[in-house]
Length: 101
Image (cartoon, rainbow, N blue to C red; front, side, top):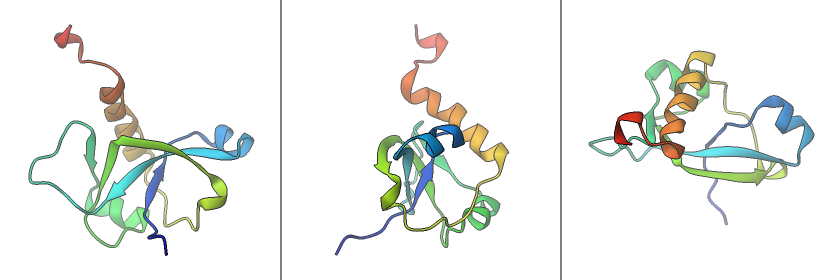
């Protein structure tokens, strides 16, 4: 039996409706004492909106594509302001900060 795990769909609606796959980031309730730059802690209101039962974070360093056929159900929808913040923080995974050049 495969354990089901929550994930945050990152790909845009136009992508999701025109492809068989979607791009997602892993979500975990295993929260370290100190967060890394590729970890985004969800607020209490985000947890409610996202339908998550316990404190969680988005692992922006653990991105993958998955077939939409494997998605079981929508737990909720994060507020747009949270999605913008997640996507801005995700840029750190792909780009060095300017002061690091």
